[in-house]
Image (cartoon, rainbow over all chains, first blue to last red; front, top):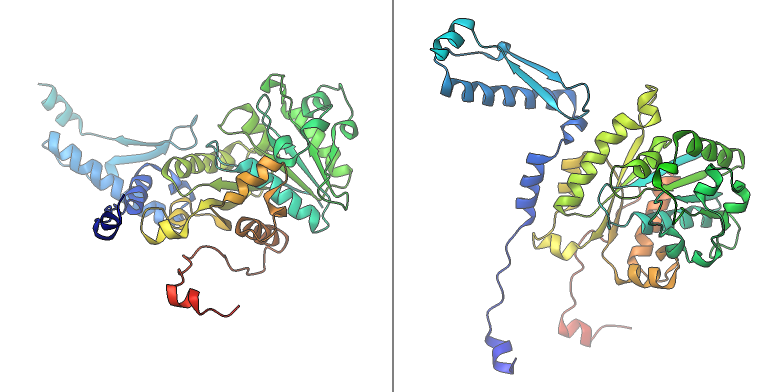
Amino acid sequence: MGVFNKLFSKKKKVDNTAQIAKQRLLSVCIAQTNTTGEERSELIQKIKAAVIQVVSDYYKTKIDADQINVGKIDSAEDILELTVNLPDDQKSEEAK
Amino acid sequence: MSRVIVVTSGKGGVGKTTTSAAISTGLALAGKKTVVIDFDVGLRNLDLIMGCEKRVVFDFINVIQGEAKLSQALIPDKHVSNGKLAILAASQTKDKDALTKEGVGKVIDELKEMGYEYIICDSPAGIEQGALMALYYADEAIIVTNPEVSSIRDSDRILGILQSKSRRAENGEEPIKQHLLITRYDPTRVASQQMLSTDDVLEILKINLIGVIPESQDIIMASNAGAPVILTEKSNAAAAYQDTVERILNPNQDIPFRFTVEEKKKGFLSKLFRKK
């Protein structure tokens, strides 16, 4: 590279990738097992709200957070299991 | 009282063996009777990093299978002149299933009886038998992580395993103390937002930070020479490992983390007129 090129060339633009990496990690890591009880409870409430939103897209009757049971799969230490109890009449109506 | 410390990570190539070698050497230099065990059956490397590869006669598996006495398999380290450091090499030929819970437990108990204050278990990568055995008897864990996505995710997985698959977890005892060691840290890239910072990593993994080792050419030079990097003079990586050892020895002492902030480059004039 000549002297003029060196003097007047544009610097290569560098993307700030650290924050992208952080966000991606936060979404995949199960570090929630290391979170405090309060943080975990807040997280579960957020997950429940998201599930309610998804269910409301497919079913007419609305469900509330009490109809979602939270558990853990015994054989795996890091898999959270959510069970949604749908009203029977709603299920049969959808089946028709 | 002995402390059994596993050096683990999940991901390969993050610096577990370099860390095991550096920390065990640092502890021995501080006068602590230390043994470092290679759990990587079939792919041993600790002997190379410690520079004792030509002195391996018997190995860990020979001891477990009763083919040699523990005293015959322990290799005295030549870098630490006080005789406080020994290495127990892994087998290069045997099956990793030869590492049994009972066998490993018996060897660790015998090392404790021999008066070893620190038993450092150098874990292989992955989450199979060797890695599980390396962490099973641990009192503490050093999780080695690069500030990079795949390494952090694997460390997160290892944290879950430590909490469920160790002897302490099985017996419902006090959990393994977990410490995070960040390696290959480059403050310049962190400053330009191209690398996750220590705070970012801690926010994700949520465990106690025990050391930050800067990216350094000294590490490859040390492994080339078969001498733990902590012995390298005027090396930032060696100084950072030394700080880590101090934190292991004095957990209640507040030792500042060095080499985590970008060093400002000196200008032309200050270079020209600097005082010697």
